[in-house]
Length: 377
Image (cartoon, rainbow, N blue to C red; front, side):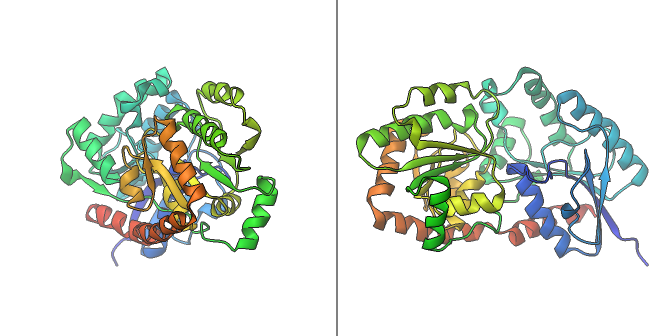
């Protein structure tokens, strides 16, 4: 009887109640991959105590390796010592890393997912030590990996161009939206508005708040939109305040309509999904994205999208969004006004979005990932 194949997976971003972009990708794709391949044993490598909900099936075993890797020095210790030591002694057929890091200190074949190279394009938005780590190790990780997974065609081209990587080494596995994002009834929308926007219509943004996400420009655009009409529309922002958010506080302090901006912080997926499904539009005007999951989350929830005309966002949104220059608040404000005042146009975007988001399913993405890794098994 042949030995069952074994895949070790870096799952340190699977943190209960704190899933963001990479965590969502890891959760959705691995859940499906494990389901599709019960003939394979998966070893999920965590850097802290994990929630049992992340052990998706009987062919998954969770392993905790110390130390918790949330700082450059600890990243190095975890990947180059703890992970490398475990791989040496357990000898899986493959090490799959979902978060752009891997180990250089192992001969086990490595497949590494790269979500974006934002640090190369916006270095001022990254702290000094973290930036040095990214700049030094990312090209080494890519070179050491047998296969690199990019989450969009844009990211694939970025990796190939910046690091002179052969295109044949890079495969694309798209991000997906959580299945809890879906259209809801009008009565549910009214209940959600009553809870979060004092019963008023609202635009929504989902994501962490720091300079690359362009939250400051979104606030300025919303102020202009509010000043141009007498609506009671609000702007809801869902997500944590990350680093360098001082400009956001300054922009808010200078707003006449600051009371119409609601910061909700991090919310559970089930709550966020209902809020998104109740919005006039998703306003996702980031300066740079490797993918942009909130775009397809909104489309899957039956909501219009305003997003940026740069990096991967046009690729992901397709023809189902208003594309704007993220550095021009007047364009963003005009898109808000178009959505608010033209219900027929908004419904057209919703219909196009419904079709567009069919390109991104976890079944398709898990199958694509399997195609990339099976040759190394």
